[in-house]
Amino acid sequence: MRAPDLLAADIGALTALRRDLHRRPELSSEEEATATRIVSELQRFAPDEILTRLGTHGVAAIFDSGRPGPTVLFRCELDALPIFEISTFDWVSQTPGKGHQCGHDGHMAILVGLAAEMAAQRPERGRVILLFQPAEETGAGAADVIADARFPSIRPDYAFALHNLPGLPVGAVGVRPGPFTYASEGLAIRLSGRTAHAAQPEAGLSPAACLGALMAELSALPARLGHAPGASLVTLSHARLGEPAFGISPGDAVIHLTIRAIDDALQAALMAAAETLCQEKAAAAGLGVSFARHENFAAGHNDPEATAMIEDAARALGAARAEIAEPFRWSEDFGRFGASGKCALFVLGAGEDRPRLHNPDYDFPDEIIAPGIAMFERIARGLCG
Image (cartoon, rainbow, N blue to C red; front, side, top):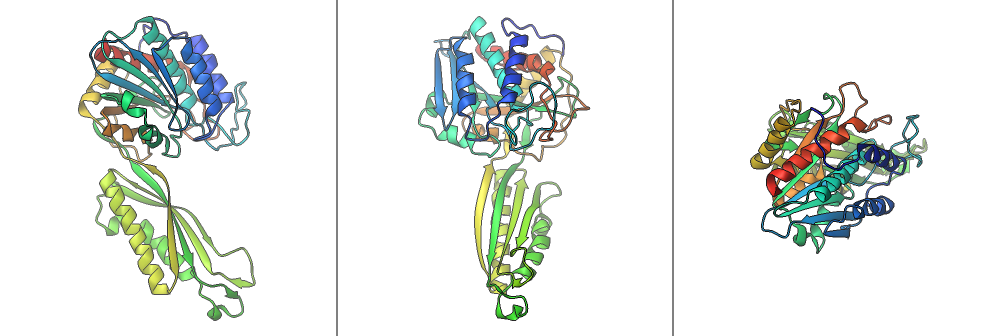
């Protein structure tokens, strides 16, 4: 991408902000200090309104032209990850066990830069909404924001977001219409039997055999259901049988799964099939079974019209294009905004030789702050002038 023609964004100041946010990570639904910092940054650009505590700690800055036109929302994320950072640069996380290894610090800097651009040349029609969303990493944040009583006042006609992506050339833009990110949800399964002395296992009811069978059969469930290869996935993420003791025949077991699918309907069917399989196996073994669901993400589906706007912006800015042949198996709760308006998510290359997302040494590349702002601004100007 050629050097973006930005009116007002101070890239040096935004880099310093990004690094300071990196030093002070907060986990999902705990982003109070981060949100307070973002509000103080936004106030410098005098938006027409700032909404706070959307959902939990969400912040929205509203630039309103006062004239008829679309409401266009740009979203970034406030939260960090429960990861021990191993980097040694000056802006390394100051909170052990927490870090911005997904690059949300950079996404926030980009959206603050977009605020500077909107303040320097306000929209000519409609409204531009800058949403700093909490709790993306757990899948709760978008749902919480949408459930907030104030969300209808900012409900978008169009919504856009980006995610930095190592493995692609710096500044390259990747997007495709249709399915873009998978739905996913965690399923915790507990099998309940009865403990016994290890010398008399027959006096108890061990879930060991049932656990072993389920570990094999659950992973094979998509094929058994006839799902197309790659359309869904069951990943065993944790298993426990009883306690680490030699004198006890176990009476309980736990299995944790992550279940993913290319669309919400297939995801719902796969979740139901997994629970049914567990119930059948448990009943046959005389065991009790219970379930808990965690971190629900809707599938991300890029609207064709919104996708075309991203492609037009990338072309106008001379950005390199990254071919996205298939949807990403990872999940992003931005997909929930598709129920409110035409939305699209794109990826922005972070460099081909960088550590991958969620690696303990990942750090957002500051050189893509300006290209990210330029992409968002180009889209905003096309819709709102």
